[in-house]
Length: 293
Image 1 (cartoon, rainbow, N blue to C red):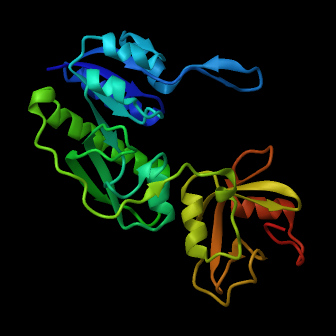
Image 2 (image 1 turned 180 degrees about the horizontal axis):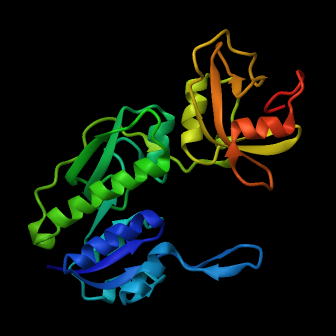
């Protein structure tokens, strides 16, 4: 077992931390991003990884420079959210668990971009950390298909499980036990963080694209001037021609290129989520009503 420093921030980085601790590694220090103000009261809230470290009794800090003085032989990075400077890497080599099959989808949102682009498969890589953005050589990887209706949360959970397996297998002997690394091969693509407007459903786009946006978990449109979240949607049952883009025919909404999308679960602004049919019975759409108008 090894003495490690762990760098991570969001919920997806919690299970890998537990994996390392449960495997018997000496996690000397956890480094995470600073507490953030959330909610109406603006209270400071720790990151999920900070909360997990506290529950495990592991020292935790938001000072990245402290990693150099922890006496560790290796740093393990999982969705930390910040580039590690070269000066620190010279003192403490690090590996990164990245949720894509590199060099596809380097960057901040690999799971979401893989779904949005309709990738057939993705995976997880255990790689050497360099100062470049996810450019380091790869020690090990594991691939998995992406389900046609799989949500980003569901896929991320499966990738976390795969990643935990890589950590348990390949870090058992510490840094010296890592397999030989191979350079990344192929054309890189970059998974930039999604912006708010990318979650808005553009009813002029084909339904297949809209279904992918819904699977990301934050899709929205408008109805009668108020925001309507679309939490679940899918292909409509076989029937007649699709309505015009944005028009409703029951729970079916017209989309671009003569396609259509069936609403399954929606959440009106300021209200709870409900089945789309229940929402329709409450709002009683008029023929002139459309989504996104």
